[in-house]
Amino acid sequence: MSEELHHQGIAAFQEGRLDEAIDLLGQAIAEEGAAAEIFANLGVINRAAGNLDAARDHLKMAVEHASSNADFHYNLALVYGDLTELELAQKHYELALSIRPGMAPALNNLGNILKEQKDFTRAVECYHQAIEADESYMPAHKNLADAFETSGFAEAAHEAYTTAINLRPDPGARIRDALLLPVFPDSNDHILELRTGLESKLDELLNDDLSIEDPLREVGATNFLLAYHGLDDKAIQQKIARLYVGACPTLSYEAPHAQDWMAGLEGGAPRIGFVSSFFHEHTIAKLNHGLMAGLPKSRFEVQVFSFSEVEDSWAAKFQEFGTNFVPLPKELDAAREIIAKAELDILYFTDIGMEPLSYFLGFARLAPVQCVTWGHPVTTGLPNIDYFISGDLTETRDAAPSYSEKLIRLDGFSTCVAKPDEIDQLPPRETGPGQRIVCPQSLFKYHPDFDTLLGGILRALPDAEIQLIDGSHPAWSELLQMRLLTSLSDVSDRLQILPRLNREAFAALLRAADVILDTPHFCGGMTTYQALAAGTPVVTLPGDFMRGRLSLGLYRQMQMTDCVAVSAEDYVEITKRLCTDTSFAASVREQIQAGQDRIFNNRSAIDRHAKFFEKVMFEG
Image (cartoon, rainbow, N blue to C red; front, side):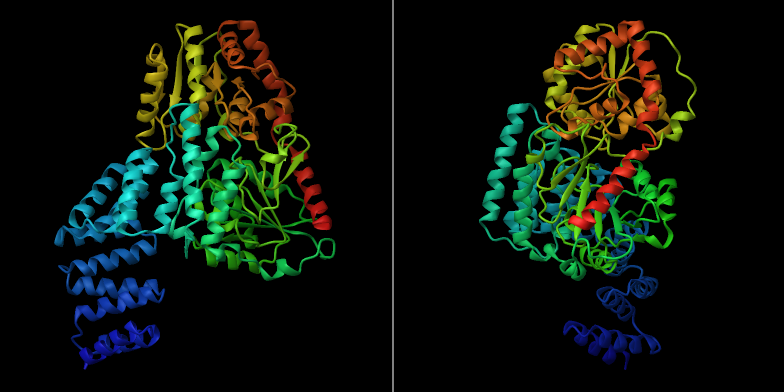
């Protein structure tokens, strides 16, 4: 009887009648002596129906009854992956592979878990093994390309994407290949060549009438590295947006209430929603929490929409919003529906472009007014983002044409940041002259122009070393060193790469440094705040766009510009003076100490946001 019910259930499943299939297989396992296969199939069908707890329980029963069945372990691993229980998923993929070593899907998925753990070497090995087992298994080629791309090996990534596309003309792989950029371009000419190639590939894709159902799953990345070239990105950003809208029209979803909203006619306090994937121990959280918590509750209703699954002390600060803190699923349709139901007046993206969830969410019209600020300080190119919130201290006079959004220049600096606790806990810095020069910026900010500045400093200070910090991916430091060996062959031995540091050690490094070097074209934001909190001078060379002018803005807010260079030569000279001229260094540190109150807990930034929010409610 159980076998007959089993067959009927499988037939119902194949015809898409999931509830009936689950009921029939449920009856089958109620029969005495039901086979392990029935438990396994009931688990698979429950997974297809979204019943993950039931799927896990039934597949666990199947494994208990038949522990040597590789398929049972594989399907249980899939469910654990869905439940984000990655250690258990890894265990069962490994068990499946111990039974059937050449199981390409298991090798591929195990590689994905290892990649998530940043074990890129083992992840790449898994993808290669999957390809050796089945050369036609396209997902392994695509994931291999992603691993190479993330690690900084652009040429290897391109080869893997090409293979994947030749196996199946997958639109997502074609877009990823088109957007592919190296972490460390060799030169300004190389940057221009890369951008020309990118635009050519985008034009080709735009002419091909691509179709994508779920860009989050099929593409799953942004064009993050484009912003680090130091050039105007508006035209390329808009072209990428047009590509996505054409390939996936559902991205342009519009919330029902946004269609009927009329500026000036809405009653009650404005409902403002803030959204990000980084409301935890992250720069984005530190830059924006003050604004979100500081907006007057009598004038605004603030809601927090978070894609973050990290639990730490900073995450707890956002969860204190209570019922107004809304976790979002990492699935676009569901996230859009949750935000749309909140019927916001204003949706404020703290960042767009660092990860795919908020980027693809930004295509939708989820509130009548949608803003973005400089968490990722570059125009989005998205048609439904109305305003880019910045400050007049960081923008050039002719900045507006570089934004697809309407540029809002708030008076002063635009963020309200608390002085970092870890800085206040440090012992006082030892006084006296020194030549400890540190660049604490992420390595992907190292534009080829920075090589010239580093070389100039090291040649001007023959006894100095410059300390950098290891990249977040193992291969990045090696790739950067290869470029520096070519561009700075005579002084590259005096560039020291420190291991990655925890929060306390990073703060101690900033306090101990004699000089902090800012990167050109894409400078420090939160790092500059931290260095100035530590009382350490930051030498900066402002760029043409806001992302290279944030340190300048902070110095202007502090009413001091002694460390703001006007040229590469001036940058080198200021650094040299800070290391050799004791009175100059002491004067700069005194000015930093005196000016700290002007940049931390900047309540005026909250007030100016509030005025903008109220103004836009009436003017639209």
